[in-house]
Image (tube, rainbow, N blue to C red):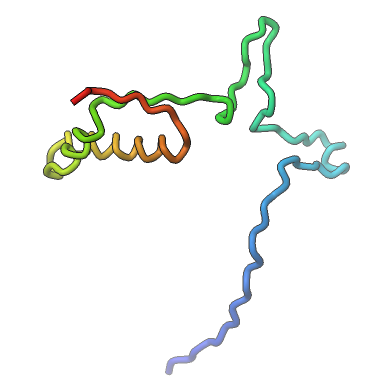
Length: 111
């Protein structure tokens, strides 16, 4: 005999964005728990004026391509057993990420 169980599915409320500043309740603060900042709005400097912590928002990333984009496209269409095909696929993915994140692309090769 097979019994079917009917279950009601509860809707999960939509996830709302957390506030940027985390407030620690007073009872936790008294126990020594503190909020740790991960993204710094201004650079933190040491005694010599050098930045101690660099957050991703402050970094400028530059990528130098090993070959021209046309050459990478041609290499990516090679056989799957060829490592050059996967090398080109990796760099084409890096180009897409660079465009998405606004990184600086330095063209390589000139072919």
